[in-house]
Length: 593
Ligand code: FBP
Image (cartoon, rainbow, N blue to C red; front, side, top):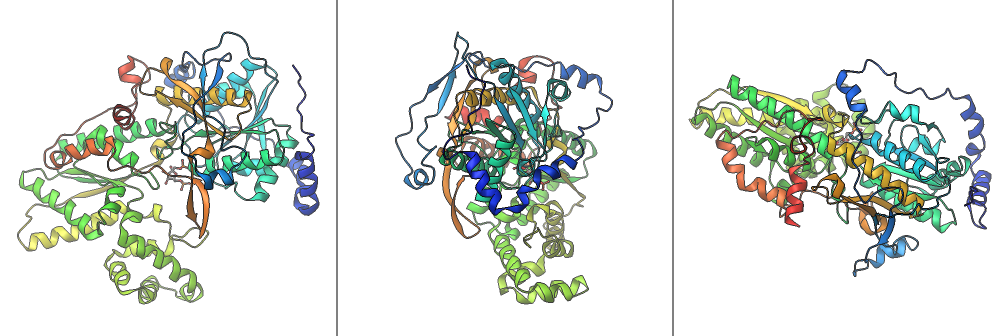
């Protein structure tokens, strides 16, 4: 067994780096700059509660077939071949998916130096992915090391990070958050980024890179793997499916980590609010839930808590619903409940709703265009009402009418809250307040027409950050540790361009099946910023899928009757049916498959 790491292939990294340094002066000075950087400080360990102390001793469960002796069994490849994707991923597309089966002999493994990145928004369990990776690599060869890049892909590009040792890691086992090394949203997507990444890998003598991220980060991990391989690099790039949004799934990925915990936290809060609504009997709670695009979180929380109304963005888009239609539907339910003496209720609103309402989508793209083309004139106008009037005058009549019908604060948000590319920041729009204002106006009209007699006392809420860094549920703690352990075996076997996959997740953890799926197989060609590019398709809520159909069966009754469920807080200690059961989404999808 050789400890040497081979970087000296004829077309290997050294050559790439030398070439790149010649053309990119900034890189030549990177090492000197790095020396001046202060040492990375980890979060101070503040007071640890009794629960946190007990939780740090939790030993995540692993599948019985998964340990350092497990061997990779290739799976049959699907018959259908996507030629367009294969052409873009000639090195990694044809690889088989693998499942790890129990083995009984140690597998000789060279010491690995694995880099790890946490990419995008935090999700509960990220620290356990690193713990699983670290523990497995050490079991495979105690001389292996794990290097964490700070603040996401940026750390890789800047060669900024720390070696993760067991003392550091032990303070983070089973905790929420990504703070062990931080996360970030820098994208690793251009050829220059990939060259820079390979330079860092060479400088750190990395044999592997683990990218813990969502659909975009894993798409880019796939491209980096392909790029590295096509240039003779031995770097093994492995992905891990992360996002509370639950929209990275398919092709052997049953769910992304973090979705389980985040939905349980939000459902606990919604249940508490519903108990309050039922007690005080006077408020309508409009609750926006995170999930940038897909409505999986809202749908899962609906299945857990049975609120009166849940909007599902994908259905809104499919039915081409208008804002007016959505508002009328909510107002009618409020009136019907009031007629039954129930002047209270709950409405769940997915964060991405606005973009899925076709007329709002058109308005937003017209606003983006207008603001881009008339930036100077717009910026020169001092007062907000005039700014709104200026913009409205430039819109097509339908978009202008919709824009003028919006409450002032939302109309202001649409023109002021813009991202670095100048686009409207749709996720920041207070949809819960927008709906409250519009519903209030509609109820006034209904009152005037004698169709509604009660009073309406609405309260807005937004749940997102409350759940993203929660201490992982047992499910996420176990799933993440298993994903990390699996990533280590994929590294051991040099399976670059694969994503760690764990299947059978509704069964006890001991029965889960771990393996890897080629990332290129999850790709499809999509238009992004005017160009056709290969990306992992975002998994939106399927209207013919089992979770939505289950919701559809009950929603009419939940709207009028009061059928609230109160799931309560996540339990970490107790019987498996209380502590380890995962989401309704996963259970329903699995039962239907
Ligand atoms: P990821 O897809 O990166 O996991 O992020 C999920 C998310 O929590 C979304 O639900 C939300 O829209 C977004 O992050 C908010 O992130 P930020 O605070 O960076 O705007």
